Amino acid sequence: MARRTASVAGSMKSKAETAKSPLDVVKWVVAIALALGAVAGFYVFGDEPLLYRVAGLLAVVGVAVAVLATTAQGRSVWSFAQGAKQEVRKVVWPTRQETLQTTLIVAAVVIIVAIFLWLMDLLLLWLVGMITGHGG
Image (cartoon, rainbow, N blue to C red; front, side, top):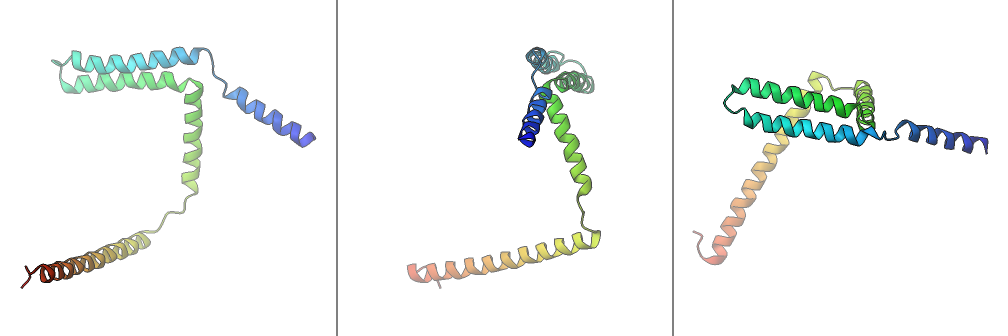
C-alpha cells in the first residue's frame, strides 16, 4: 500500500509541475500575434532590403519562441529536447569504413534490382508485342 501511495504522490507531483498557468493562454496569444505581426511586417516593408526584412522577421519570431518557452508546453518541449540530446550521446555511430561498405552494398543492390526490372520490362514488352502481333 505504501508503494502505491508513493506512486500516486509521484504522479500528482508531475501533474503539478506541468500544470498550466493562467497566463499561458495570454503568452500563446502574444506569441501568435508577434509571429503574425512579423510576417505582416515582412510584406509591409517590402521596399526595404531583403536582408533587413529577414533579420527583423527572425528576431521577432525568436522573441515569440522565447515567450512560448515560458509556457508549460514550452518547458515540456525543452525537457524533451534535453532528453533527446542525452539519448543521441548514447548512440554508437558506425565508423567511416562501415558507412562506406554499407553504402556500396546498397548501391550495388539498387543497380542489380534496376537491371533486373529493366530486363523484365523488355521481356514483358516483347511478350505483349508477340501476343498482340506488334512484335517482330
